[in-house]
Amino acid sequence: MGLIYVDPEGPDGDPDPRKSAKRIRQAFGRMAMNDAETAALIAGGHTFGKSHGASDDDMGPEPEAAPIEAQGLGWPDAGTGSETTTSGIEGAWNQWPTMWDTSYLNNLLDYEWELTESPAGAKQWKPVDEELQDTVPDAHDPAEKHAPMMMTADIAFKRDPELREIIEGYRDNPMEFLDAFARAWYKLIHRDMGPPERFLGPDVPEETMLWQDPLPDADFDTIGKREAADLKTELLDSELSVSQLVKTAWASASTYRDSDKRGGANGARIRLEPQRSWEANEPQHLETVLSTLEEIQTEFNDACSDDVRVSMADLIVLGGNAAIEQAAADAGYDVTVPFEPGRTDASQERTDEESFEALKPRIDGFRNYFGGEYDGLAEELMVDRADLLNLTPSEMTVLVGGMRALGATYQDSKLGVFTDRPGTLTNDFFENLLDMDYEWDATSGPREVYEVRDRETGDVVWEASRVDLIFGSNSRLRALRDVYASEEEKFVQDFVDAWHKVMTNDRFDLE
Figure 1: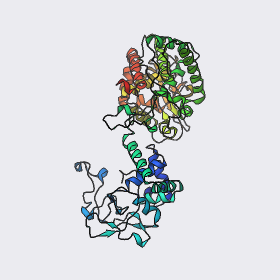
Figure 2: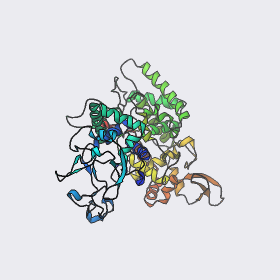
Figure 3: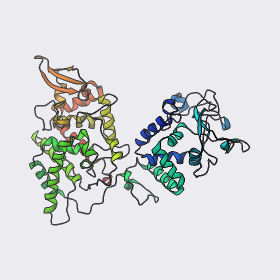
């Protein structure tokens, strides 16, 4: 049952259709499916086949609990043929379980259903009406007939008012149902592949779907090295600080998820809802940064006599790059952060606000941001985020240390900023974390904060989070910390490389 999206008997086996509807919305909402898409997928999926719960015999361990020698196969005593038992629910949903039609919807809506149990003891629903008895052909013996069945997850669509209205519409408009299922199915099996330009083969549809986060084609010539250099000067001469430029570029690009190729800096959706209002992005401060960037963009584009233009997406990334180059120079290092122009700006109309909420960070260890409620340890969630950004352990480590040195923390907090030179790209974070002149004490409070004290005087020098201290506590991360604490030049170059990787994660056109 762990391989099915929701428990078909009801949440935790509770056969309450209203609770089941809520759980269905949660599960399919995580896949960015709205009610209409969810209804199409479940109704379409239950148009075919049957469920298996013909026996109450012990089936043995399920696939996830089976021993290693089972090689992913479970339920060794699940039976075969008419005795097959897997989910525990027994029966088909309609009279023609090998044909696409609306009989599933007809049965669900036109007849009354009452709670019962399968031969395996699972909770399911049977028709009250005699009319449906002996109408479903047996899957193995043509001479046998059965009544159809429904799961609690099916009855949920009948009991929930909004879902019922949708499936009634599908029943009354079969072609709309077919088209909705086709589109939802396409979304289900392709939405982890990123934009359509990553698709291969002759069957790629010409239409770009909203869930594919469409971007407009550039109708201008992109900036070159000379224009980029001029813009970096403008950005550094503005009133924006190094930390503001770095945090804005990070907030824009770090939304990327390698799991489904969503998010990233391309499109500059940080200037659109919902990202513009995310707490982690400090909306009030973000408004100031975006306003300044928009002025620079407008002034530059208006001054161009040819077709060269700079997009806001490119300008945000360029601002972060310029700030890092300046911070490295202040530390005595001459570096150039690679920059590939070509990003375009998305529109609010072509942004699926509801599904983008799934990218909203609960915590961001790179900025020492801890938002509302979250499950798990902060350092584990940071590793999870680093994995979504396709970062190696060393890349994660150097980025955290660099962000702290740059003072690029949530609300300019001093948490984890172990340096007297914030805004300068130094390895101070790692040196001071390694320094045995300090000791660490936990403090009380709703968040786990640690005080960094001078061993001789007992004075509090800095404060740290679990995310900061894990680079001393974990043996593998401690080894990486030692490297960066002892080799500042390597730290600076590795930070530049890791930063560039994050900024270009979503540049599929560069591959």
